[in-house]
Image 1 (tube, rainbow, N blue to C red):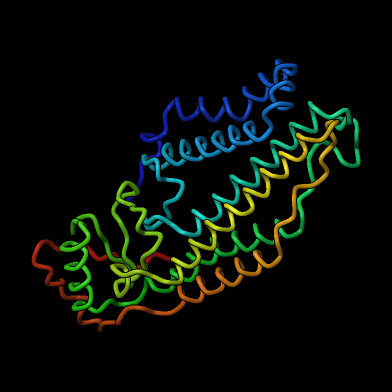
Image 2: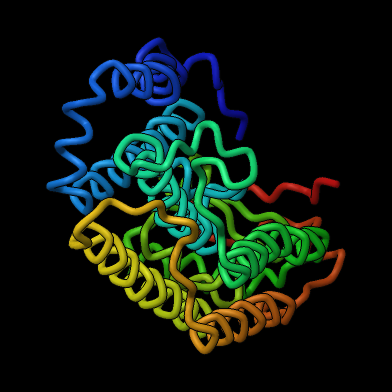
Length: 304
């Protein structure tokens, strides 16, 4: 389905993005004294406000592009993407902490970081965080590449009919909402994406069933983000409790054991994607229309 971006995107979307990127920093600069007083009293709360700002802008951009507030988390199959959920979660957490510390270094500490050519105002990033973002990016890029090979496969018509019957009778789907691309199941529009997509398979053979590899990765991601978020909050609280406001050189390190668990989870997630969970049909089956009873689901040929 082609999305009319010009129709979805409007002046409010542009205004919100401009305010966040350009106007708010300028206002902060003009009200430096009030900002310093607030940071000296509520550094962690300031971090929460920045988290909310990043999250709201991501939702706004997703809505402007796709017409749905879930748009930033929806992939090119109009399905809620676990890899997108994961990388956006880490991006918001790390970038908000990075921004909070940079503002602290710039306005609160006695260190004139604007004239410090070597260090500047920006905090350093531990190598574990770089590895984490690399793993997340590789997973997001690798997922569609693995799935692309399944678009050219011919589905088994009986298995497809059984899957459609199960989805419509037990999970509340409408047949005209679903589309088939090879072995993959897709939605007609981003608004049809469901939170349950994070936990189910992607093919005809497992779209209606729980995918344990995806469930494992979701829990590892959620728990890891919570653990490191608490670590960041404690780190900022300790900085605020010091007698003098010190220059923060680096964000706290992510536990190496936690990083290893995340890496193993992503490996299992991508490996599970590479396994075929659907039966293949014959070219004769592909030419004949599926007997779905309540309305046919249009099957599109593979693209690319």
